[in-house]
Amino acid sequence: MDSKFDNGVLSIMLPQRISAQNAPAFEKELLVIEQLKTAKEIILDAENLVYISSLGLRVILKLQKKFKDTPLFILNTSAEVYKIFDDTGFTSLFNVKKKLRYVDTSAFKLIAGGMYGSVYLINEEQILKVFHGIQSENDIQPVISAIRVAFVHGLPTIIPFEIVRTEKGIGMILELLNSEMLSTLIAKNPQNLDKYIEDMIELSKTLANTTFEETTLRSRNEMLKSKLKAAADFFTPEEFLTVEKYIDAVPKRNTALHGDFHAKNLMMSDDMLMLIDMDEFSLGHPLWDVANLNCIYQAMVHIDKETADDVFDFGKSLPYEDFYFKIIGCTFAQAEIIWNKFFNGYFLGYSEEDKSKILKLVEFYANLKFITFLIDVCNKLKDNPDKAAKKVQTIRYFLAKLKSQNLDMLIKYLDLWK
Image: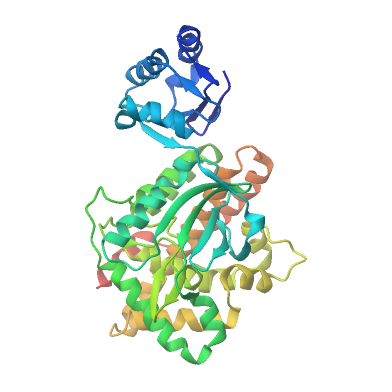
């Protein structure tokens, strides 16, 4: 029986048939898989399964009872096999998913691309977002849930229709509104920049004033700590605790965060800004979103080219500003204007002294954004330790910068945040 164990997730490929004849052998082979004892999640992949008998169903039930504290998923079922699970009530006991429809991205026009995904135009009503490095439907289920929760709470976001498989990984089909990316509008209509920035401020404050039940969405702090723990092998205990301390210093709040708030993750539809790329949508203090904007439009602009290449691997033959424009959608000069107008508008009415203090706090967490981004990269480089080691060295560069500052004093500036 083929199985794969990766980052705590055990994936087991089910055979073509599980009948009365082979169910005992299947059970014996299944229950001796060593990683069952330590798995954080068990996936039974039914892509090859064409038939399962009642005895086969009992084996799965026995597996679930034996490891009742471990989430169990049955994925990639055909319509016929799904019907068996549904008719026998298994869909109410387990998370059973039908086989995803396959979509070939070469049939569609690429309209946007970033570090985490690519977006294709399907037709005048739909787009396809393919997530880089994600091969499991379970990995984007939290994103789907977050979008739906945001929509129900009245936040402006696009509606997801279907999860699909592509040759480049898991994708999601979304509605296409009569809209245009905000970064594109800024480039095309610089005379309207003040209005666009006002819309960004209004939307960011709407997020910061939208409250959810604590268990409705993921906590930003806990999401970051989870990524840190997954990459713990790359760091010394002291480094791990230092980064965790920086995350824990930000007070938890039950208010909405986009998680990657900037003009290339916003679209203008009928004169209203819409949230897109909701991968990091969560609950937390608005500091996280404002710091992300500072990282995008200030820290990334002023970083030296060598460190920038260590972070992003854009290739030293490519001018850094060209790479920046490709992923962010504006020039360095435009980025400076966007940040200054956003920051001064967001903190309108604050004294210059208070704004100066808050800016220091924001800049601290903008640099932490580099660290958490690189931790994410390290998690994806577990099979390439040499490349991961280079990223860890860059993390240590940013850690040294942060350690030189008085975090306790900076955190007190949060009291100024109205």
